[in-house]
Length: 501
Ligand code: UDP
Image (tube, rainbow, N blue to C red; front, side, top):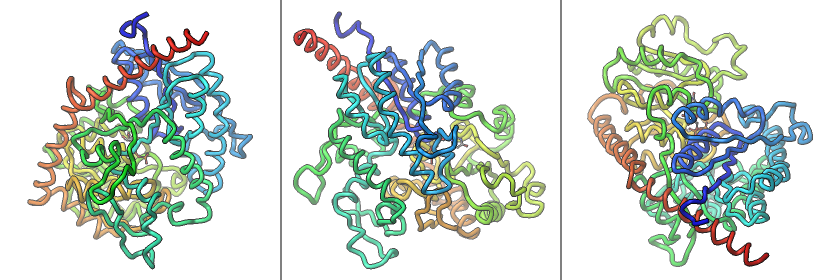
């Protein structure tokens, strides 16, 4: 059969965390829309999180398959049913056990590969063993980090050069060497494993294995677009920096984002991710009454969870800013603490002016509404890119993961945001930020000349993002190139196999 007619089959295997499953589903949808058979692999309790997207895609004639494998939670010392990262972030111990459980997914995944014999495996960076699994079946393994080129470059440079070891205190800034821009950080802003914190040793080992397996893999697929960070997209691939000779990075990579732009209408956008805690129509009705660019959207992703004292400061800061807002408050452990974080009479005073969503918001639907004019974000890469795609200036409030790198991209390189002043990396809870800082930062992105300047740059970037995924755009072309390469790879290895038999 010719390479044009053979249907390519790709397996997509995200880490069981919303920030990984959501963009991976989008990616699978993009592949499927180009005629590829796309199968998502996950664990049973995570299946409902994909339902709506899969159903909506089906209505549009795009077929996505889903297959499950069992996560050995109990064997890893976790309670039964602990199948998502957002359930294990309360202690380093459970966090570690979760990753121990994921390492046991290799055998069941290989069984699925054996049964279905796909042509390619796109697996999360947190599954380093997936490169070996793909190799056993003679198929390419692509790595999905879920972060941008800038952060992939910065974190790899940090790993190679460890500039944080050359400063004498946690607050003394150092430059990340060999980057196209001068980027300064402090040790406090680095992940625990980069500061040598004991509890993070296992995680550091996992990340080191992830890099090794990435180097042996077929390449990296990135949720970004070329025009957003050309210097870093080139650097990641070509590996040369301005200051340094030789190939430092030099990965094979494809940019195919922003993947969230595959949602075209309101129903589609509302169905992305978890079931929203607010009726989408109610939310749109509220926004429809507001003037363009007059509402700030405040959300800290799917895993960050602030203490009551911090939520209280946010409420006071938002009120003092005088801006209208939608504020998403994740409630896990704080649920039983009966609303003690809300200042007295806050909701009555804010009636019509501020909307609190307790739980899960239809984020992309909200960001894309014309009434929204700014975004207070924890700088998770999905949220950051969704903010860019919506053309919004941002208040950056990094909490953990690679979010302090993303802040630098937004504030220093793209110049579409201002930092709230978070200085301390801390899993889930972040730094403590005072109401005055919140008030000032929100005002800076919403009103005045500086806000207008950032908004106009952000709007341009938003247009570029949409162009990138349209026909002949840079991400559209890179996805085509990747699919074509996988087709050729598939047919040549099948021929090779035939010769071998
Ligand atoms: N998200 C959402 N509603 C919420 C919270 C998050 O739709 O209330 C989505 C958001 O649009 C993004 C993802 O969840 O696609 C979060 O990923 P991100 O990388 O921003 O942060 P993480 O949750 O991984 O920290």
